[in-house]
Amino acid sequence: MELSELNASERTAMVGLIKEVVISDGRVSEDEVEEVEDVVDAFGQDAYQKALDTFEARFSDEEAFKAFLLTIKRQDARELIYGTILQGAAADAIEGHESELLSWLAEAWSIEVTTAEEEEDDDDSAEESGP
Image 1 (cartoon, helix red, strand yellow):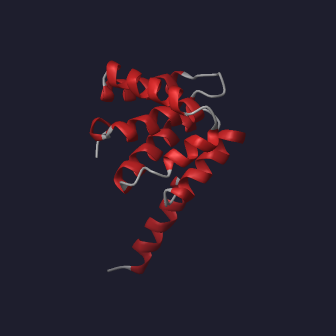
Image 2 (tube, rainbow, N blue to C red):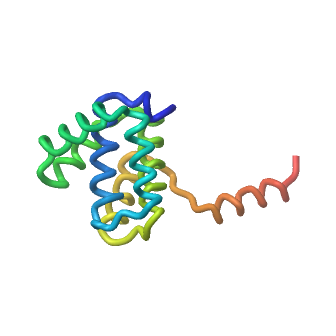
């Protein structure tokens, strides 16, 4: 699945998470800017702005936004959104509120989060066990 394939609700979720996780701390790194630009390019400027306007008009508090995030049902869309947000957030240190929201989202969306080190360990175990 590609970012351009997300529906209107999924785009609103993506843009809201960008705002809440990636750019919420007020410090936006060059890598974070590139992640946001990639999303804008995938959606198109007008669709991105529409999703942002929808997010800002509908969600005045985090609890309402979390309730909305639970309505996103397509697992492939969930995984794409989460992975994109995680990559953008990881460009800078993930801490405090960002970490809490990402942890909540991973559990709510049934996303299995593994580190590169864990993946390497899994690969090594598979190689050792042989065919």
